Structures are given as C-alpha cells and as structure tokens.
Length: 392
Image (cartoon, rainbow, N blue to C red):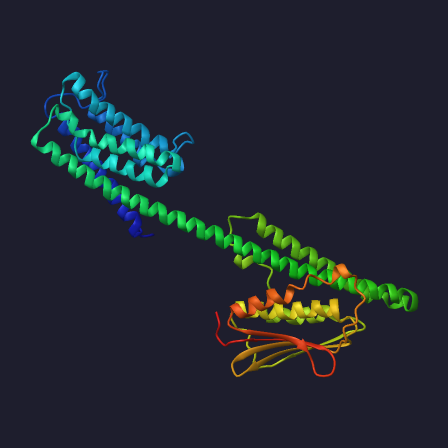
C-alpha cells in the first residue's frame, strides 16, 4: 500500500480547512434566522457565493472543461461575491461573511496572478482584490472593526499577491532556461548530424572515385568497394532518421537520444573507414577504461571522426592511418596520424568550410582538455586531444 506524499497530505489538509471554514460561514450566516440555502431572492445567500467559489478553487484539473479558463475561474466567483456585497446597501440588509469566503478570494487572487495570461492577470487579480475589500460593506455602515478588516485584507492581499508574483517569475525564468537548453541541445544535435552525415558522405564520395578507377582496371574487385558505399549510405540515412526523430519530439528529453559515440564505437569507425588503398590501425592502451565519463567518450569519438573525415577531404593519398588511445598519467590521450602529403581529388565543394576543428576544439576545451592539430615530422598530419582525468 502506497503512503501519501507530503505534498498530497498538505493539499488534503488545506482543502479540509477550506471546507470547514465554509461550513462555519454557512451556519453563521443562518444564525439570525435567515436562509442559508440558495433561493429565488434578488440577493444571493451566502451558500451560493461559497458554492461558486469552492467550485472554482477545487474543480479537479484533469476534469476541467475547456471553457473553464483561469480567467473564468478567478473572475466569475469574484464578481458574484462583489455583487453580493454591493447588494447589501441596496436592500438595506446586512449580509455577513466569514473566513471561508476570505480564503476563497485569496486563493482566487493567487491563481489569477500566477496562472492567468499576462493581459488578464492584473484584471482578474484586481477584481479578486476588490471583492475582498468590499466584504466589510456588508455591515451596512462603518464600524470600529471596518478599518481593521480593510488593513488586514490589504496585508493578506500583499502577501498572497507577492508570493504569486514571485512564483510566476520563477516559472518564467524556468521556462526561459528550458527553452535555451532545448535550443542549445538542438544546435548540438544539428552539429552531430552534420558530423555523421559529412563523415559518411565523404566516404561515399571517395569510394565512388575508387570504384570508377577500378571499373577500368580491376572490375572483379568492385564488390567490396560497392559494399562499403552501401554501408556508408545506410549509416548516413540511419543517423538522419534518428536525429530528425529527436527534433520532432519536443516533449522528450533529447540528451540520451543524441547519436553520439563512445570508445567502443571508435573501433567500428576505424573498421568502416578502411579501404583497399588505405590501412587503418587502432592501438588502444589496455589501461584506458570503458568507465570514463560519457562526455569524454563522446568527445574522443568526435576527435577520431573529424580527423578521419579531414583525411578523406585533404589527404586522400594517405596509405596508413594510425589511431591511438592512450592513458597518460590518468589522462586520456586520443591521436590520429596519417602519412598523406595533402593530395586529394575531391571537388572543391566537398572540402568543407574549415569549421570542423574549430567546433571540435570548443568541445574538447569545454571538458578541460586540449586539442592540437598540425603536421608531423617528415610527412603527414596529426590530430591529438588530451582529456583530464575524472571530468564529468
């Protein structure tokens, strides 16, 4: 059997207090012999005012009809209460009020300020405040307690309204933070999509060029090349489908569904990169743990992916590529080196805009690491990233 949560207990206690106060109000209104039940008299009795207010405050959220908007919930009961108060001088009949009606109007004031649309919040809030301040009018004239009641009402309205404004401000800031987080995450997803698709499409382009050359000299060896093109195209489409699915689903958390890689994925990445004219060697230090933080593993994967993509774009003549994962005194070092001399036959449009390494450096430095990219001694190019230990 599940136990009630503290929030549920507090809500139940508040509802109980409100109902008890309203019951006391009803019986107090009938203590002078007047009717406490709804009748056809021109002035609504106290029970009708309380019933309208209770319905607005306690109507279950899941069962509220569409027409019962926050402005309707807060405006109608306040108008009924105000009319009941203004009816006392007209009919020259004293109408009492009690704690129940005061609590209802304060609850409606809170809802108006916090939940109503901006254009309606101050209107509904002002109507609730006016209904609360009109309650002493029912005594048919000033009394010693009228000023005290007005002062107490002003204090209560200030406290309740201030709390509602504070919580509404928090909701607004939280909404802005959520929107900014989603925007940032979606930009990161777009960058991930660019990285994956650019990597696979560049591979398709290179292998297509190889296939065209082999079609004339070695047509029987085309099948492995065509299989690689098919695999790269399939992976690119799968990456796009996953990412578009994430972007379409705005209500879910997107962090866990981003198409990022890890250290285990680096092996698949290097295997898929190899071609008949390029040999890729992966050297992984046994000291490198699979339990590294997810952010570090994803960034390491990105380093290898971007480096391999750049090799295809700018060093297609490279025959040997070495990928190393090494534990350097508790730090993860990732390096990709090739022996190319910058020869490439890719079209100029396929060379990229030169922002890959810039974005990669931002990703690495955000984790407290360092990225270096430059020529090797002799021939070739090397990309090396170092991540600090225990970065989360």
